[in-house]
Image (cartoon, rainbow, N blue to C red):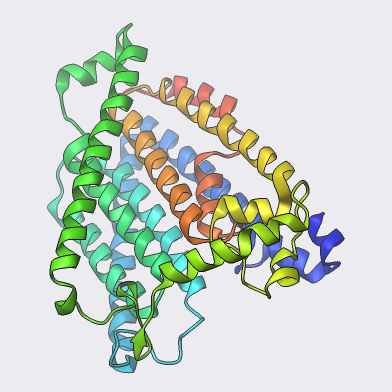
Amino acid sequence: MRIVIDISDIDYLRSFWFSTTLGCLLFYLLGAFIAWVTKEINLWCNKNKYLSRYNYYLGFFYILCNSLLNLHVFVKLLPRRRPVFFLIDNFGFYQRPGNFIIINTFLIAYCYFNIQSNNKKNYLLDFFYFSYFIITILLIQFVGSNNGFLGVFGILFLSIVYKYFLLNENKNEQKAFVSEDKPKIINKCILSCFKKLGLISVCLFVILFLFFTAFRSLMPPIRILHYNLNEEYNPLDDRLTMLRENFSPQLSVNPIMGNMDADNIISGKGTYVHSFILSMMTHIGIVGLILFFLYFFSAVFEYYKSLHYSKNYKSFYLKLFVFLITIFIFLMANIASFFSWNPIWFVLGFSFPAIYYQKNRIKDDCTKLE
């Protein structure tokens, strides 16, 4: 409605909801649909061991194909690179590939840990899964998407932490999931996971900061390290400058209801603040922000309750892994993008669909124990 009132452009309204560049509603519904499909497949597989085996092979094939496809694309594009590790004639056209790669990486991570539930050790699967991340990180940095790089790297980090530090194969803890003390055990597991994740994240940040400070001059000229075309470029400085100079004036246009044309009115098209929450405040106002957080916090609360309905240990940790990625993507959106950013709406639709909580809860209760 704000688009119709502020811009009076039906084409932009259609693009904002349903295009592949913006498409908030399209990607939210797509995420919710894929979540429903995967949930139904998991329910069928829990009831039939043969289907579970086919589900594993399908997941393995999906990860393998994505790894080989990204490798093929990278090899084909490599001759077109500049002296800087950046694709020729691609400046300004990297957002959509970066967004799609983040979404695809999220699905691959979910697929990997979902089929891992019934296969404790599979070194070939591990090899292709982590190879996918190495290839994709090189490819997305070559394309020039810093958001894509951070998104893929963050999911890789969470995958490593989840697999080797959080997914504790303690038999007593697994048996406790069917005991009367399950709520206490789940709360204890959630708290323990966040403590471990926080500690490992701080350690990684300190190590990376010291490493890049000490060896900055030896680093290759890639865009994440401020290289752009043939000169140094700092995207963080650009974002901080837009925050300092544009946020308050754009918010003052209409702080209560917002204005979808606020950036164009104040400082020019595309000069919005690169922050999910702050750009939401300037464009749909405090009222829009409150409505979003009513949805977001109620969805988080429902998801937290759904963790307590997990029928077994591995189902719980798969849900927790999805929740961790969702929080990571949400935090990343608040320092990197406009509020119509595709990946955040896809992940919100996948993790926090607005419609099936009660249905899911009933189905979870009927799921066969592993």
